[in-house]
Image (cartoon, rainbow over all chains, first blue to last red; front, side):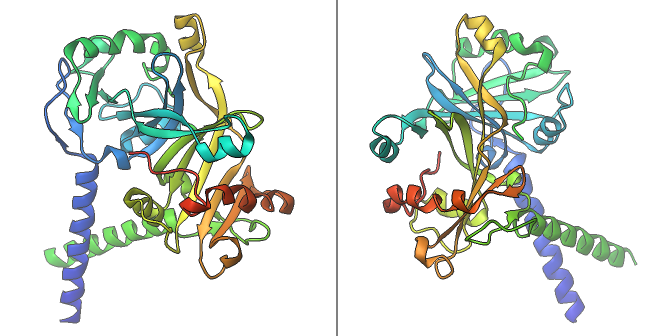
Length: 174
Length: 174
């Protein structure tokens, strides 16, 4: 009897763990982005960190690059090309001076992430489906809604400048 | 018989999941940092992202702030003070212009994380043990080794400028 209860609890806990893992990394929701037909992946904000970056100029943001399990493994191992199933997320925020730090230093010293900015972008590896664009599908969402088709037409041409790194700008930050 | 095998496999999988979760967030190794007696937490590179930041001036780096489960929950909810058990990690890397981007734009545009820089720092909340320093213990490790006692003496005085935010510089980046 005690064993049966243990078994039930164990099985229940395992199913719960597996279900939450699936929910965190597998599903997607909302409208699909144009051209590549990619939906906003659920749970991407909980993915692990590949690297951080900053764009100056017109974009003027500070960013984080996160990856699903397949992306993290490949990125950490530094093996190219990324395998099918890789999903890389690029989040960005406004680049804000930290008020308390500026006051203490008497000049700008520390910058932190403010509000979300420049959308959230994804690269999805599927070497068959996206063969025409280096095996990658691209998607941008602004406040959860897919960006325009025009916006999606610019992704691949920009990423082509890092073709030698399988079209991915960021290396794994150790 | 079939059930027994299922039970064994299920229990084995659960133990493996629980063990790896424990390893990822619970244990620590190596020498303890001075003053606060904090060991380098195992698996912190796999923690989830709180925010990103940049320091100009002498530090000149780009950073990621990661948190253990307790830190992520508290940070996301925006509730202060952080509960006991919170551990926040600050990683930093050299702030490197991305060569391919500079070439394409004819000027610096994109910056990425290079080699690790300025050590890895941790804040550990224990309101009893660290009552004299706002409930926080501080630790810095350079290439896995604790930094000097002198270095650890500077932590709290700097974090005091954000006392109103429970001594934590970064807010959760949504």
